[in-house]
Length: 57
Image (cartoon, rainbow, N blue to C red; front, top):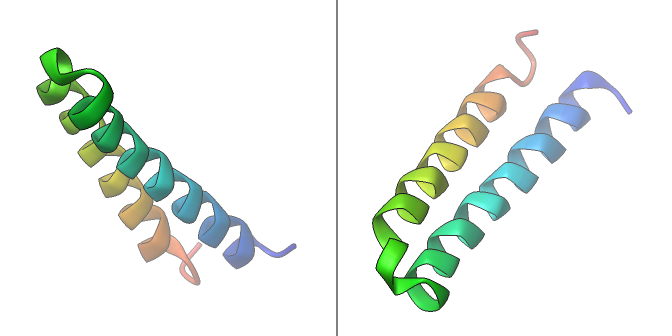
């Protein structure tokens, strides 16, 4: 596995985890939706940054 494949997998899994956090906050823990949503958006933003690093590092 080269570095681009590793960055692609890391960004994919972090995006899935971020979406999972948002969904869990919305459906399972409605009292804590804001916290789960902000954490999920943070994971998606970091995944986007990893995706932007592909080919540059």
